[in-house]
Length: 566
Image 1 (tube, helix red, strand yellow):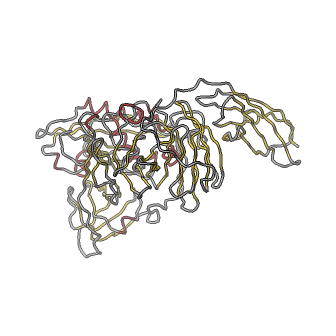
Image 2 (cartoon, one colour):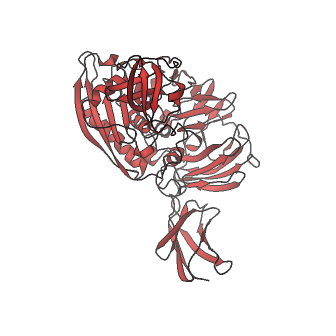
């Protein structure tokens, strides 16, 4: 769910108020009641408040997801029960309820039947790699004579197309196309009194025969008048099928970030949150102001999809653009900006003691991030987060993946919580589990020295001076690279070890693709200037060709080696 953004000028600040009806505890099984069957859906509510410059940002813990049941008669909002909380989104369930009326909250008396019951939340198993799929948006504009601020079909179409294009770009081919299949206007007097489930029920009736299930790739988007006083700017069902998903969206604010955020929920994403670890650990819902799952701040656009979310969604090329570091190792890595389609754009490592996976990424403020809030020097306010100054600016960012949500983990230095780490600065995890130093950083790339399993060799961070500049250096001009290939074989019948050395006038980052003849063998990350491969080949002559793809700071190059396999 996206909180309602401020409609005033950015200099005035942002005010966000979130609310949800209290959910009562589950009812024990009771006789009688009406039985209804449908697809189980989820939406993410929150409680709390947030304010921008001049006010204090308050931590707002999440409530459990709201449960909806998509039935033939309409969408019901269900009171949660322990049984339903364990069932995966998209599962067909039959429940006994005391009143199956659409609108309000329906009390569940008993869970009668759950199909695919073994597919429970958090245990659905590994998802396949993303494959190219086409998505469709079915739009309904609510016209309400009792309130001002109706969307028009023209304004709704423009926003739908912008948000759809955003996700086609961010999916990097996993979504082959995202079209607006149809648009309808429905006149509903007093529509602001209807909840999202009731609106989705009425809107779906405009498209008989169209399914908006968890795997349909169809998205029903309902636009309510802007003057409706909903506690949110947008609301959506949360899928668990990634790029194969569909779902329902409710929008009450004309901003790209709102609809992009809600479609992110349809695509299985949670929220992008800010976590402070000192003096106490606090979660600030939505406040990692970088990617699409943040709150809508002013009129800024959502930034590029976060590296952690790329990994979660299995975006094409995300694996080869991510350097995975073994826990306990130390390394130096050249990072390309997260917006780049070449080079290494993320470092990934997992703490075995906690099971938490971390990502380092460079947010440089260019490319797909150019219209994001953090990239605008005029917008870098010193937010007050529970008495701690927070500034959103370019630099290296630490995130961790928590289910389908990501958290930006800050570092407290003096009176400031560092959201990103700048050139020459260091970061030490609050528990001492890892640390890193940003050796250099420009708009075209950064060099990061990482230590995992401790912080040995990483100096303690130093308080920033009062006149610190939160900018980032201009991009560097590209330099040439050269690629050489060597191959060895320990003995006849053993694998051939191919090492590819990439040389350039600066730290090399990115990956190499190796071919045997015209057959691709694999991709490998360049570590310390070397990419290493092991391949089993039939006896005889073979030519290995290695192609270094380059990155924003280093040009591509290639090399060959003829070899006779024994």
